[in-house]
Each structure stands twice: as C-alpha cells, then as structure tokens.
Amino acid sequence: MRSALLSLVLALSVLAGLSLAQETQRGRIKSFDAGKGVVTIATPDGKEVSAALTPQSMVRNASNQDIANFKQQGLPAGTTVNFRVKESNGRTELVGLKVAGQAAAQKGGGQRSGASAPAAPRDSIGVKPLTELGNEKYKGETGGLYGNGSNDPPREQQEAAKKAAAKIQPLDAGGKPSPSGKIVLLSVGMSNTTQEFSVFKRLADSDPQKSDKLVIVDGAQGGQASEQWVDPTSETGKRVWGTVDQRLKAADVSPEQVQVVWIKQALIQQGRFGEFPEHAKKLQSDLTAILQQLKRHFPNLQLAYMSSRIYAGYATTALNPEPYAYEGAFSVRWVIDAQVKGDPKLNCDAARGHVNAPVVLWGPYLWGDGTTPRKDGLVWTKDDLSDRDGTHPSDSGRQKVAEMLLKFFHSDPYAKGWYRREG
Figure 1: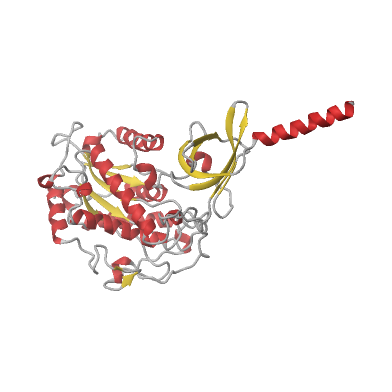
Figure 2 (figure 1 turned 180 degrees about the vertical axis):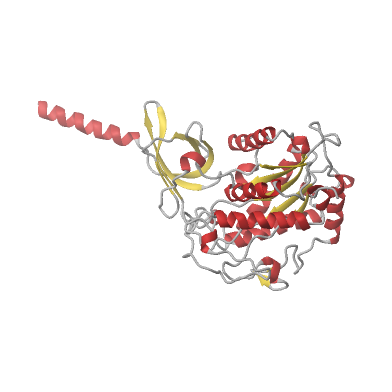
C-alpha cells in the first residue's frame, strides 16, 4: 500500500512539473524592459505573454547560437521567435527563446523572420561602390548617391539646402539668435555610429578651423538601431531619447540649439524583413520616422546628413553582414528622393505646409569593397573591423570614418557657414 501511494505521489509530481513548462509557442517580440528583465511577446491569437528572464533562460539566434547581450538589449520589436515559458512562484518565467529561421515567411507580407548566417569572411563582395556605379545597375537600381549616376543633389535639393544652411546661426538656450549662442551638431545612430563619431568629436574639438560656436554632441548609442528610435513613447524610445537629452545637458546646450545632425542607422538582422528591396524599404521607413521625430524634438533643426554603413564582408554574425551593409545606401537615397518629390512626411518647406523634417543630404559615403581600392584610395581591411564580430569598427576603422567626417565638413558647401571659424 505504501509503495503504491509513493508511486502515485511521484507520478503526480512529475505531471505537476511538466505542467509548469508550457509547450513551445510562436510569436513576435513586442517589447523588452531591460530594467525589469521582462520580454513581452505577442502571439498569433492576439494575446501577449510577458516573461521574466532568469539566469537559466536560454536565448539563441536563428543559427542556434547564444545571444550574449540579450539581457541588456533584447531583440527588435517584430522579431519572430519560438519560445517556451513556465509558471514559477506566481510569475511567468522565460525557459527559452529562439529567433525563427530565415525560411519562415509570412503569408502575403513578404517579411521573413530570422536572419541567415553570413557568408565566410572575404576581402571583397565584387560590387562597385554606389559613388562609382554610374549608370550601371545593382538589382535594378542605378548608381550614384542621388540616383541616375549622379553624386550631386538635384537642383531643388541644393536650393533647399542653401536656404536651410543660411538659417543656421548661434542660438541661446531658448532658441533665440545670440552672438554668444551655440550651434549643436548631434549624431544619431547605433553602436558603430557612436564608436566612429566619438573619435570624430575628438578630432574636430582640436581642429583649429572649427568654429568656437559649434558644440559637437554624440547622441548615438550602442545597441540602439533604427527600430529603437522610431517611437519615443515606447519604453525603449523613452530611454533612447532621454539619453540624448542627458548628453545635451551634460554639454551645457539645449534641444533648441540643435541645428545639424549626422545620422547613420541600420537594421538588426535585416534578413527578418526579406531580401532586397524589402529590408531596404523597412530601413527607409524607419529613417523617415526618425527624421520626423528629430524635427519635433529639435524645432530649430535645419540639416540632416545621412551615411550608410562601412564594408561588412568580414562579418562573422548575422547582425549586419553583406550585402545588407551595401544595400542600406539605397534606403538613404530613397529617403532623399522622397523629400525631393514632395512627400509630405518629409516636407521641409513651410510654403508647402507643415514642416515635418529637416533638409536631408548625403553625408560622407563610407562603403568600399573591402581591399579593392575606391577611386579615392579607400580600402577596408580585416584589421579595420573588430575581430569579435567583423561588424563593428576597430580602432583603425573608427579613425578612418572620423577622418572622412572631418574632411566632409571641411569641404561640404552647406557646412562652411557653421562648421568653419570665421575668417
């Protein structure tokens, strides 16, 4: 009798243990709260599952590799995942989570979840830089930063840029013109951006040709790619934009004094959004939203310079390999083209209605085909990228970008009035 009772207790214990861990589910990341360590996942039936991370939670990418920084950065909203949770001590805990594979396509949307593993690291991917592609085509797109083989802004964009540049002047903390005021140049972007811009700031702050009215502030932040900037009301957005405000305050300047920005953004694991042009259109959409938020946040913002990424053929992770780094340049071009064609979301002319964005131009074009020299001699060697992931720039890579930025602001016709010291 005692033996039978013991067997029953053991059986019930096993069943109870099994009931604690639910079956594997599928859903999309809705949000991630790093402070609380809670990830919220929306399931196809319209429900939301909020699960706490524990030291035992297993989180892996589409290649079944551990995502080491998940507890600090989470995953972008919209990422499709397979996950399992359990109930423990009155709360829902995450047992495991895995990014869904590249092959899982959504019906009717063309958006794919997950990201395929990058190709083996290589010195070249065999395509021409956009600045040298001319009238040749890449997947149906002509070359040139501004399209149709041209690396110069269209006439109407040049006129808009001239008008915007003419408005840039020293402003006091309230945004009023003042001889003792400041002009702020702010960076916006993710980890690569802050790594490169911080070196540029050091170079520029010691540049004898830089105006003493110009204050350079690095607003870019590690792990904060385009999706983290588009909604300032989300928990992530509040942190991102709050950090920008904190850095402006630390530099003793105000949002009203921000008049120029440099934007370098990307998507995390673009393969989740499909092949070209799908992922590039997603980035275009994010960049458009970021420009709108920037104009709302900084009412005196006049010019936005945008750059795409450096060479990523040495990438060893699915974070942002080639050809995505190359193809991101088309996102920038499409944003500028939309503004030129009068897209109201990017309107920069008060005569045409409410102003929703600054005038947008290309900043320095940073991409080169690895060790194949560009016409200006630029190459990207393996030593220019981090040996950790082949995606983030090493010290030499950061220096290259910083020097390109410095050269750009010395030579750009719309920057000479605010970057250079008078006389």
